[in-house]
Image 1 (tube, one colour):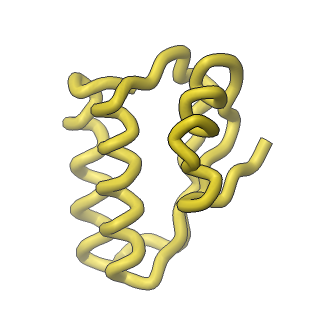
Image 2 (spheres, one colour; image 1 turned 135 degrees about the horizontal axis):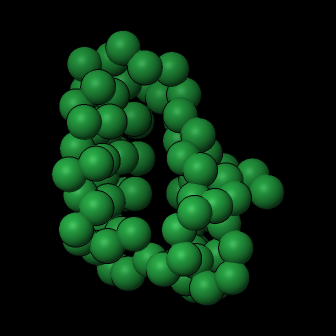
Length: 82
């Protein structure tokens, strides 16, 4: 997940802001790499969800993606699911 993925996420962020989605589970099982822009995308989603009283759960993280999320202490910001 990098800066180039931001377009795919913007629709979800807009839907969150409109308040028509329930809590969201983001499946990261197909993500092999995440950089600082990818982390920023997740933080923007989290902020949009919080504004509407929603929660985002991250699932399916493996390998280096899980390591990066752990190093960034995202487990304190998101719920993790295997």
